[in-house]
Image (cartoon, rainbow, N blue to C red; front, side, top):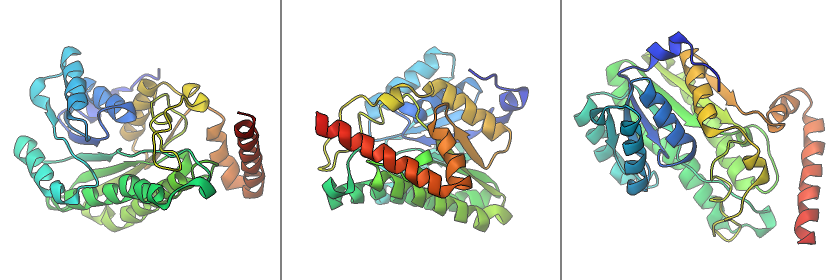
Length: 285
């Protein structure tokens, strides 16, 4: 695991950092990493019992209970957002960072994917992130400072098979937050996009099939990916270093980012071959 430089150790102490999707995966790992650095954390997701578990584990590791606030939130429930923001302000007085990390993935070919699955991809991965950002942004403008972040994906830069909906959603949030950066920089507000590759979480097993059911299978690529705790430490270091786009991963998928930029045609042919391999495996099952 990479060492966190002294700059990172000093960067997050007493900052109020709100993390969505905090009950598992990258969100949970980020909460625990920030807690070790002395941040004041707001934990949100739909799973209140899991949020409480994460909070309890942070306390057991030495964090102060008063620095950890559980705010259950469904990011598709826009009407609940003003009250959630007010709860955070009442507890901590400000919001220094909002990390839009909630979301879900997909595992199905386009021809086998219901339109409702595409709608879900955008509701959870795009519209929810935009809505909460818009709910928090006026406070940051009033503060004259703040930092808005979103967890996108390599799939937000590269189109890959079985993920037409997920790729579309992650491309969309990348575009939204890149554009937002241009609009809010003069108000003292920073924007960072996080671009993970394969990270060892349950995102594959929790992905949706074409009919909207849980995929509920281990994903070999994800199982071979970066440890989620290491991923969180890389993100913290990137934030401490002032990066506006943080790429994080260890597998060959990271090379696709560079190939897509330097030689799009080669990337397209490579990914078409990947899709053919997947079809062949599925037909053999």
